[in-house]
Length: 107
Image 1: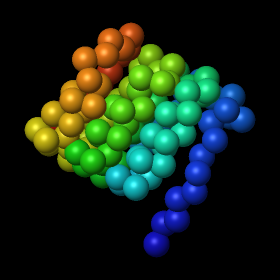
Image 2 (image 1 turned 135 degrees about the vertical axis):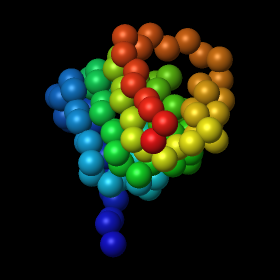
Image 3 (image 1 turned 90 degrees about the vertical axis):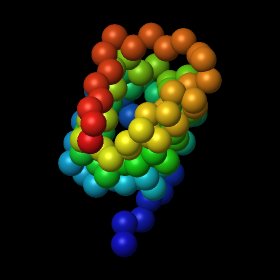
């Protein structure tokens, strides 16, 4: 069983992180989302391709974006389906984000 703990991104000075193929799932994605929601991360790009993230994880991440400084995000190859895409769109709540790049595919 994978155990997730709180992540504090303010003490990390990474600008770009790739967690591709790490099987984070929704629980890991939600833990990462909570860290992004804190709003103090210098992180600019995040790659979560192929992490078994579903609609639940997609919605959690999108809810965290408004408080993060992310400019590039990739979550291709995750089985978020139409429900995940809708959760992602709805959790943004009409807010404007200034992504320079965002990647997704049918997963």
